[in-house]
Image 1 (cartoon, rainbow, N blue to C red):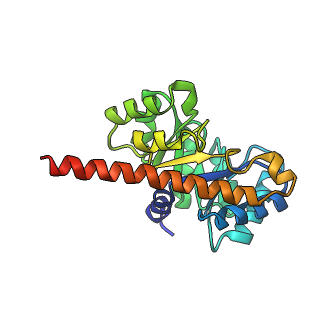
Image 2: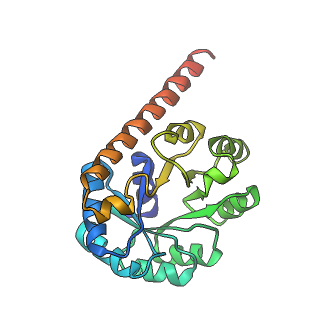
Length: 228
C-alpha cells in the first residue's frame, strides 16, 4: 500500500486509536474490539516495555484486515525497528528529521508531532503526510488548531492529546483531518479486566460523533457555495 493510500484510509476513518500496553494478548484483543466498532486502524505505542513484540503480534494477527501503525517513535532506529515488526505507518510525538527520512526510506507514511508554528512549518516542509498536533489541550485545544489552520491551510493536521467523545467534534470542525485517541477508547483498566466490549462501544460512539461533525461542515460548505 502506498503512503497516500495509507493516509487516505486514515482520513476516511477520522480516528487513530492508540494502544499502550506491554501485553501482546491484550493488544490483539483490543485491536479486534476496535475493528468491531468500525475502525480498521490501530497505533501501537513503542513506549512500554516489550512494545516491539506487541506490535509484531498485532501486525501478525490483524495486518491483513487493519492498518497497523507504530506510535511514540522518536528516531530513525525506532522507525527501522517498527517497520521490521510490521508497522504500516509511523507516528512521532515530536519532530525528528531522521525519523522522517527513515520512514521515506521504508516507504511508510509518517505523521510527525509538532506544536508551535515553527515546528508545524518545519514538519510540513519535510514532506510528512500529516502533522500530529500534540498535545492539543496544552495550547488551547480546538481554538489553537483553528488558528494554525488559518496560517497553514495546506497542512493536514491530526489532533491528539486530551481528545474524547465530549470534544472530538470541536477538533473536526476546527479542521483536523483525523483525531488520535488513547485511553478514551482503550484504557488500561478495561483491557486488564478483559472488558473489551466497552472498547467497541466507545469506538462506535466516536465514529458517530465524527460523522456528525463532518456532516455539519459539509452543510456549511454547501450553504456558503449557494450564497455566492
